Amino acid sequence: MTQLTETQDVACPKCAETISITVPGADVELKVSPYVAAFGEYTKVECTNEHPFWVYYC
Image 1 (cartoon, helix red, strand yellow):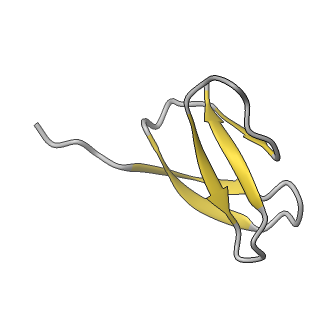
Image 2: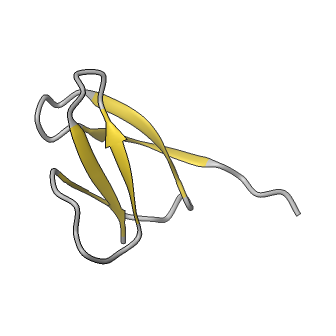
């Protein structure tokens, strides 16, 4: 069984730079946050301007 890698574009909440990230599936809804939460499945991202942010999978 081959696992496909899906990507989606997200915007940095501080500078609006668009970044392409890998997501677990095409039907996943993404929520961008400038802060980390205590729970939930997420990935930490940093734009080229060195702004860290978190993308949560819903």
